[in-house]
Image (cartoon, rainbow, N blue to C red):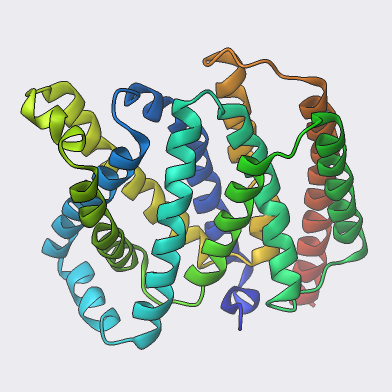
Length: 307
């Protein structure tokens, strides 16, 4: 596998990083939205998210540039293969996120998001053969230590966090193999998700459609909004993914879990226990090292370009 973002210029890489950071804000606060949909079972909620997301994204085909891009992308075999696989993985991740938010595990979701960038960095090295400088390698070791402390102090196996972290990272690996653009790629994703969602809705039966039978228009609007909000966030995120290396995403991705932890403690009333505090402290130190090394490397490249 190849990571095309490795050879991008610094200006494009900065745009990619900005896209990831903006998307992180949306991803970090989305648990609050799922809590609003607490009356809808998690299985049904992710199905409606997919269906309404596809409807929303199809509107973009009215734009000539998106339509032209989409017609080109449907001819590419890798888009069908890798986006199909990525969409399946992402469908499972969305279930974990919605179920966790609705059942009082927002802090665990934040923990999982902290682990996800670690999996990203590891996959970047193991799958894409990306190399780390000494300071970045030390930062990664610090993250390992912090996550290890969290596991030890936690006292039980954090299955939800690990599942969210691993499959979120693996989604990125698959999505980076598909050359489809942001908008057309998301049409692909929502299409594949809808192929999973419709049979699941039919299997769930009457309870999944009760909200429409009861004419609960406020809840219906929230369900439609879930497709819109997550689609917009995903477009921005994929834009950043395609312009950032796996290692960069591995470290810059820590903004989202910080926001999720803030949401969990301030808005959801979940206690921030000692294991989380210790682990977060290690991760914060690793981020400082990573950013320091990134700035230093960027300045060295700029000086070389000047000369």
